[in-house]
Image (tube, rainbow, N blue to C red; front, side):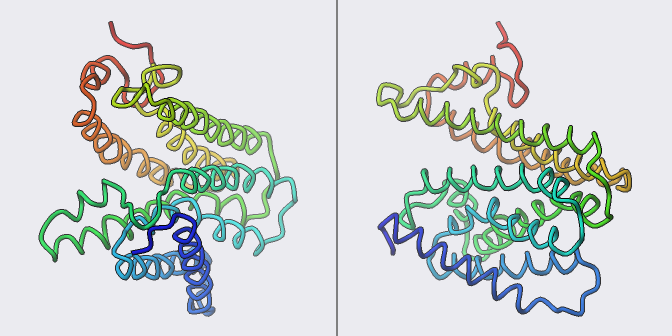
Length: 287
């Protein structure tokens, strides 16, 4: 087991670089549909990361995949078509900012391969067959497919030679503000946790006074921002609303309840906070 944090991160980076590069090389060039090609590339990379997590016996190897994988995908997509520099900046700018922010969070908070996310431990806390099923499908493949689906709307704005219209500007600003919201929420929580006086207590100040998960709210709005970018092309079918809505469902029915359940076990004041505070939307606390 690799215990040193810096060595763990270097190993993780090496695995990721190799995984994405080899996955790109083995993805068939003959595939004409560019999104199908990207999806296969994305899944191949996930299989490499999954293999690494099995070898290292730690599924937290997958943690940065959520924010790292979209980077080569959007850059590759942007380089395949002739679009204005302005359009590329409006689309890629907020996405790269989001990716850097989340990856920075991982660098700061990840303790190395001697630590595994509690959610992964819970999912694998069963018999051997079911544990590996949950590991592959629940921890690795399903999140990959959700992210892939969430990114799909940018296909319409980057591959159809559309102009950087006012709707794209508004969508880009919306997406950027969403990332700022989750950044502020995360920094507020980090500052709270870094104070030893707050050990065992619930963060219920600033943005966290109005929402139990304002960082998740920002994350959800980010994916709706990508949807709005695609919508600005005027070419995207409305059924693609399922793309960000799938992300919303993931947080509402899985991530938020799991975090709430853990907090209820670890903090005596969380039940009262939970009863008074909105799960996602920034709303005044209940009396």
